[in-house]
Length: 146
Image (tube, rainbow, N blue to C red; front, top):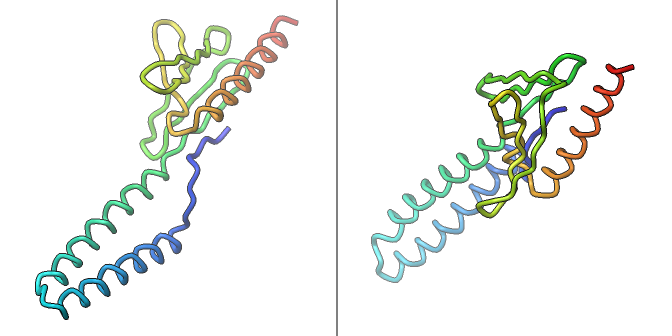
């Protein structure tokens, strides 16, 4: 499975949004300067740069993802872009959906270790992922017993 956050804008759409917001801010600043506020264009440039930077940071946060690989002996979670990975034995791993602090957390636990997965997903998506992983692990463990 490949988990990725939902992203509403492409890179091209993000550029268009930033350019549109900057054009509106600069137009308003020019009108303000025409009426006597000489600092309006300078403020508009600073504000447009800050908004562009903040939107860019938020958009790049959508690049993070998690790849979950499940086979007969292990369940592996690889976090990208950091190349961090964790491996759990399929027989011992437990899936817990804990609620608290305003949102539910999906945890994989085994042998005293725990790993939160899908933190960037919505509540319903996390619950669905929990059910799907439980079904897959149950089927895998039943096949092993046969």
